[in-house]
Image 1: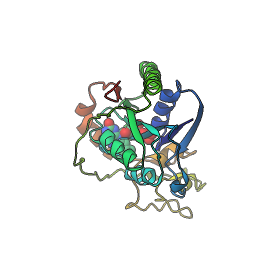
Image 2: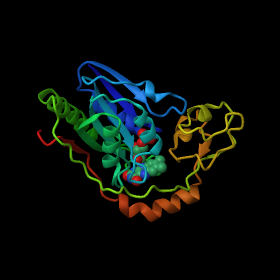
Image 3: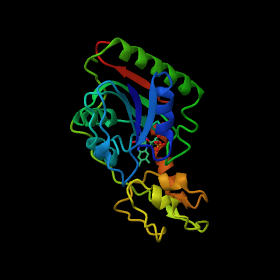
Image 4: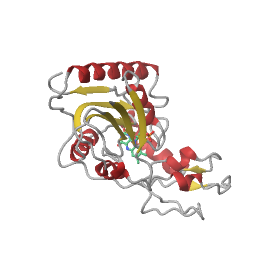
Length: 258
Ligand SMILES: Cc1cc2nc3c(=O)[nH]c(=O)nc-3n(C[C@H](O)[C@H](O)[C@H](O)COP(=O)(O)O)c2cc1C
């Protein structure tokens, strides 16, 4: 049996949560990123004994569509899946429901799910520093409970998660990171963009139709040369502040026979 962490994590928050959840699991562990534009994901064929933590951030209450597509190319072969949605303390709406449907479609058996909070990757003042110490302890405990549940159940019961059909409409975004003067054209942003939106030979050129505003180019730049327009960001933060006011808590969902 291998325990996989299959993640789409442009700025690392989703990876952090997944690693904490996986700590309690026995056996060989492997991380597999869904961020590569070039990888042929159809080569990933799992075994029914494997356990796959499938983790995505919530983007506008939905699963990032590239993650849905890439997951859909894999063959779950009835491997049990732990679905993980990571969000920035606003709401995750239909993310877990859509992830559950996508995992099933790819042949996984959804057995457990977690919704967890991490620092907002656009508006960093929200959920700043999360997962904090309290979250970390809780997520490790969730991992333990998931392990006990999976150990005790060969066939997980129906997994109920929040969310609706039809899903919330996909959002559009005005947050396209811009290049500043500190750029030395190293090309890292273009190489690591999950949707190939940055021209590798002219990194100042961004295909705004392709960009999904995931903020990976900002996170991976060694010169901190990419950023969002401060005025737009401040205005949106002010407008949305009420939605982020209360601290949201992590949640664990287990199959009905838990
Ligand atoms: C395009 C985009 C849309 C987002 N939409 C939401 C949202 O609807 N609700 C929320 O609480 N957080 C939202 N966030 C915050 C992310 O879900 C959160 O920061 C997550 O930890 C990012 O994962 P990563 O660090 O693995 O990239 C959004 C972030 C981005 C970049």
